[in-house]
Length: 152
Ligand SMILES: [Mg+2]
Image (cartoon, rainbow, N blue to C red):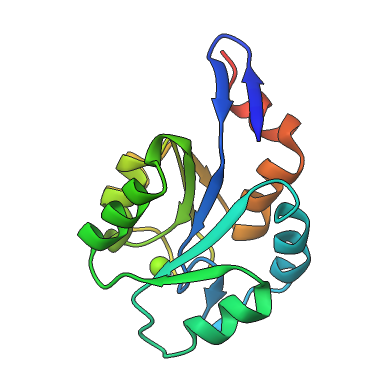
């Protein structure tokens, strides 16, 4: 999707990278409302899941959401995998310290607080801080929300 941000030029986002635990899931359970939003957002861009798969459920959840899953066990892995997708055309939604390099690397880094919190270093590296993953996904589904936050 290409979004014109007044005062900030065009923003092209081809891929939205998602973290799993603390982002799509809280306490190992998918956040209610995520399934519908992912279905909507899949019409506009690629969506990928980067996770260390610490609970062993990442592949099943990615299948359920109809998105691809790449196993990434370190912060370096996440940033490297973003580079393979052209990080300058990626947004990421994440929450942990393991996501710090990813949030720094992508064009648009979004962190979510929710029930598991955001690491302070990752928080400070983000472009946008959102209360939960549904609100974060809605920034892309309803681009006017994203424009209102990013415009100068
Ligand atoms: Mg996480």
